[in-house]
Length: 302
Image (cartoon, rainbow, N blue to C red; front, side, top):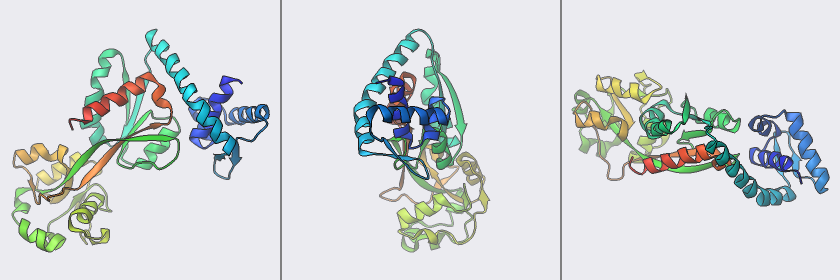
């Protein structure tokens, strides 16, 4: 059986689409379709059900993928190791929110540059957009708080991020912690809100987790300041623009300096989990596996 046909088959099985598999393999969609048809003729059985949107494997297709994929991944790993031994390193393409990549991911990966690794980064907060780019082969690794369900992805937990409700000292003086615990969000009426989006995603999530309030009971007024970068949100809060919910890693220095104040320290702080997402099977690539492992080890200290 032709290994090239098997490689194309596994790519289609993982991508769920001839078009996405063609992008990942650097082939045309008709070429992928032709190779799958050839393999189906050789086996005498259909491997995929053609749907309006993509394809789904038949039972025969699932069985073949289960048997073939691990061996193809192993061959790819051997080939990649040989190629890198000869002195060539692939560029690693990353995507994720700008704050987390800037303050966490890139510093953790920077030492790899000393070993010849090159990095390219796309700053984008939209998880759906980043995952679509990963599926299309535009990125090698995506860092996101939205764990993908299904699709051609393998996702693993990277770290948990504590969320803190903060404000500048002037506003903090108006919010008594005891009253806040007793009354909930009502105790914060009149304090402006700084957020990353008009929908108040961080404040709403905090309200739900800490005050057991339904998402719709976040502050009734619109955010006073909307800035789609948490670093900008922190600077606005530090300058006295209002309250915000921020990850502790980002605001801890400002807390230590007294530039912002935690309005509440709940016994069970709300957490947000970050995930590392790659295309299934791509960790067979040595440069990607090395970066993936380095991030996991660095995250143990975050």
